[in-house]
Image: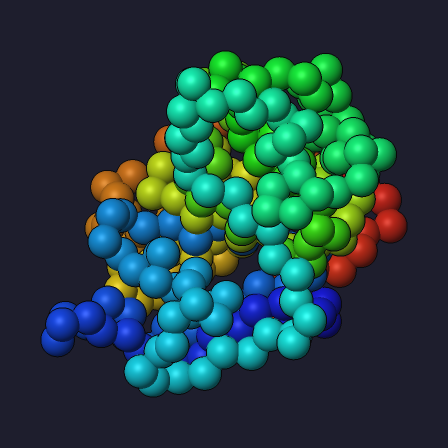
Length: 251
């Protein structure tokens, strides 16, 4: 079994007497891309905060390595157009990084030419790549991407998820994609967890798309979600873990 990067067991959280999460179990392993999907208000952000130690649950427990390095890519970034902030400078926030490291991270995400570009002038796809470059600068064990496809067109989404898969393969990190937009995020994952206060269903994208609980929540099926399937060089065991695959690729 691959190394567990974050595990929640029986998590319960409520705010102001309203239950947000009920008995949620969740596991993410090294080398795995997991999509956490659900409608707005389903508790996705709360679960992520619990997994990362930013929110204390009322019930249940969380297990993660004490030295876990997390890279976070927010849904959006607002930069004042009057603020002169280049991509090179942005990659040094909150602390300065050596130029060679910053240039390598930009090259890894395919946009080395943006070094001197102003952050406020980037397109949605360019900004996603730059924020991903900043997240991997830490040598992250776990990448958390919040609504990664929200500002990218359909063609760019396929490229973005190819890139995320390539970063995972090179770095053997875990990736958590958080979204209520099912299409590419769902198809671009090894495993999907459908959340609506509790775990409605979980499994491969195809299995979740055919699950009655998924259909009841979203009114759709996997047949409507097959925009893009990433390639990867491992297969999954019966426990949901990812194991290397000697030859061939999967979807």
